[in-house]
Image 1: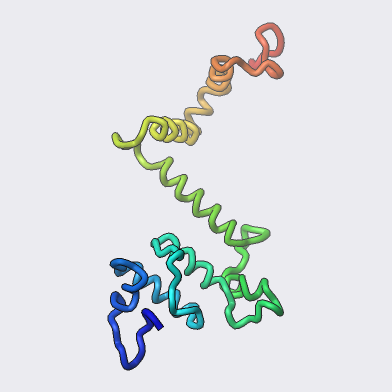
Image 2 (image 1 turned 120 degrees about the horizontal axis):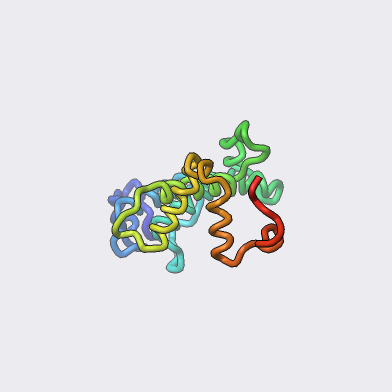
Length: 175
């Protein structure tokens, strides 16, 4: 089979994967070898329309790590597709349910928080700097409490007001 090392033909990892990739990087070789370990029965001849970028290989590893290839998909497809993930990921005490979507949401929230709390950089585009500044203002609870509702009323008024709650002649926000 193309690209598969045998005991009689001991190729380097780069030689082994070269038929599929023009010049595989060490990271690609490492990930392809992980995929081969996770799915040893997969075909050894790779298709031309398969994505070999690092994100694609990472995604393949995630899927294969979650799958229970020992399970017959015709008997229990859920166990086949998710069996290892279920066995290796218990529901945290703080959650009523847990899935890869929850993990992805948490990861996105953490990355977003890291971006928003990082100091503004001169290379940041203007909207990002504005969002970082706005987020910092929202997190400054001391300033928010000292200003009371006057700041939000000013913002509301500058954007056309909130007529169902506040009007010049009617309801007053002064407590």
